[in-house]
Image (cartoon, rainbow, N blue to C red):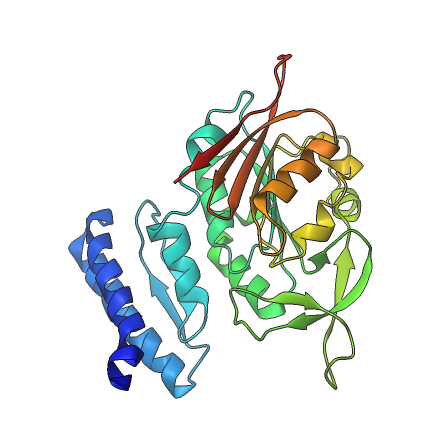
Length: 286
């Protein structure tokens, strides 16, 4: 029946949220998340998007602010409950010397920025996000560590300029688009990585972690192994088709050096290997 097909996705979400109850130390925080999920779904169905709500989540002492009826809830589930970066964090937290500089491309509403701030308490973080409302909410969500975060409102690509923003897929998946496709379209600045490095006044500072989730633009950002990759120690990137994890690994190797790669579905962790004559190794995580 049609109604069964319609409710199946919501039933799947409720099932997953029920499983996540063991993540929470306080049952009331989990119950509040269940309530937020229901209101979030209703808000989206009614077109009531943008109402802000604060949620307490595992391993984070401060509430996170999201907008109901938007992609914010999906991002919250991915980062905090599904823990899509869990395979990478033990490697990143064991790096010697410790991570002290993070560049987060596609910072969205600051969920990953908060994670880097917790994992690397002495790190300086560069948060790059093209959407004005997203980056404002990002600043709210990282206000406790604001002195360590520098914000750039822009796209990042291989060539500087300006581009339009495609919001068709929702707040969690804004994409760079060709200007002029729609009337009165907002123009967003496009910066290159060397631009961001220079404007953030990083000088010769090494980038210990480059996190990248830029909805398809990674194919042009990493294409051919650009020279700026030589100053990066670790890359954590979400890859979007038709660009593949294998393409990313090949492009990064094109910049020189030996890298160990770990692939978990469409997320790739690349860590530069030092003091070894062996070639980099690629691991698959099921």
